[in-house]
Length: 167
Image (cartoon, rainbow, N blue to C red; front, side):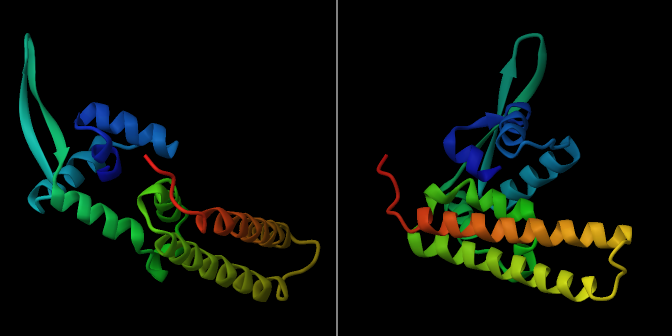
């Protein structure tokens, strides 16, 4: 949400649409508005009423300097406990243009550690299931996806090491 507001102010519905387009997922109002309220209370976002003729007042949200700093800090760090969550990683990856090379590489390293750990756990489980079981099919697929993601992360690492594009 903060990354979208950093591009341009928006009212709630517009912000929800932009977030959904950027993440390829749906975002409920039950998630959107409480988050906006927390950001407003933290001083990261301002909320300004905007009158509409014949319709209820809507509120326009705009990121503050505090919010820009908060956004950067959130993007630059990927704690190990979040690194295994694809959405957490993808949100940071989508905003790599806001990060330094060192910050990008740190995020990629955290995700790589998480994927390697998932692959190791999967390898351990594979040893305990029958070769012709449905569980084995699932575990083989998880392992295949892990190896595929590790190859992808390596290509991202090469690109992330390039200097940021000039605006």
